[in-house]
Length: 315
Image 1 (cartoon, rainbow, N blue to C red):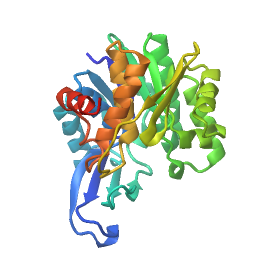
Image 2 (image 1 turned 90 degrees about the vertical axis):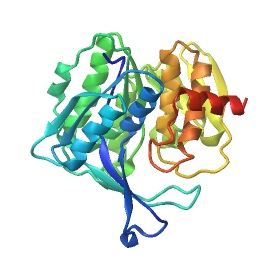
Image 3 (image 1 turned 90 degrees about the horizontal axis):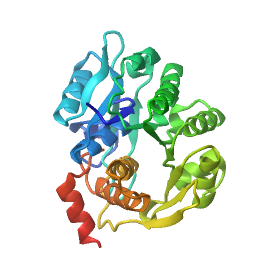
Image 4 (image 1 turned 60 degrees about the horizontal axis):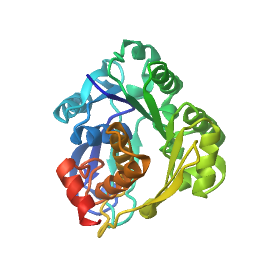
């Protein structure tokens, strides 16, 4: 029985094996990707029970995703298989060290974009303590957007804490104004909001971490953790507690994709274990740092031994 639920689009991912324009690459390595996939993998590796709510196509990528979730101890009973539409996928270039990789999406009209909000009525809420949602599903279709809001509302009705990571994907939205309106509307349903400073500038007009936190607290959040890159994060609560949490040193950045998902893993796993917000933000920074040290979106997410070793090495 899962203590955590998350909702989003898992995709097939093929990553170039050499640094070159994607059109010239002949060999790729297959992975599974998606912000919520990364989050689920990270929580499971730390021993937390998590269920994924989604839809994939009945095709080789979709079948592989179902197997991948099971192999990573992620409950997949809420992942529907679609006979009509295909699973989404991405191609990712191999970047120069420290650079953001080029990612090409193939996710228009995918199985997940046809997610039916009524499927949420099948969820067993017994034992669910936390629901994590990002802003990505809301960009994909009206039904996905409706389902995201419904899931957050259901979570609160059943007494589960709700976290929200804006995880902005402007390229998936037809209009910036609509993106801002929808994302901030979803954030208003969350107990914990996890924006980055760049996202704050887009969503409410400031890169000041405290102003960003105040904006979401004003919308109803109990706590806001603002990610400030390598510097760590700024944390503020509705009760007035506030502090800066330092980042971790990374000797060599390999792939920046998944850092924010790793931060969410660290923060939320710590809160599930009864740790303080200060401890949670510190763990978030550690897993975010580990995530950028390897290729692939979730391969760097640690188990407890690797996490503790890394955190102790920098204390």
